[in-house]
Image (cartoon, rainbow, N blue to C red):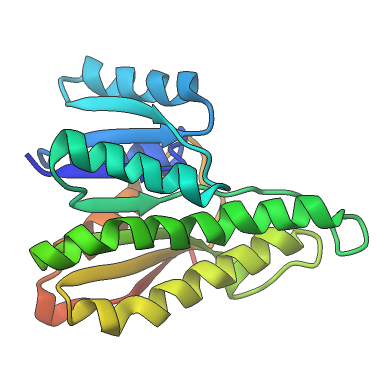
Length: 217
């Protein structure tokens, strides 16, 4: 059974995407900073008959991310699909945000994604297969001075996807992002639509791989 790992699993796009892959027969691992939240989401999937489990991860800490990936690979053999969905959404202008909180936000919003991609890459390369999915955002295209750190983070997510796409495609790994340009509430049609976008990217034939789709633009 293939394994889907969600880092930064939440009740909106994270859960909807995990459920979309679970419907396709994936074993789902949901990881979040607060384990009870991840466990609640895993329990919801299991109540529907899907295989799911919860893990704790600190997305701001590269070591925590690497340890999570190693644990999942040991237990399940590999991570076939990684979904990085973690984000620190803070309303603060440059003048309003202390340096420490800004650096923390960047560590979650982009640093954790880089660490996760690094952690899964070696086994995916060995298997010459795998998908790395990154949740992007409209702030990458239209940065907001009131949400500066998430704007920089989503720009970084987009750059990471585009920067890795060709190099990793040659190794059999599909790196892709959905740039979400609208608000997405839990259990909404938008959450399901974003999940379908991620599934579509994963399902593309290799000769038709694309790096980015936009939703709500």
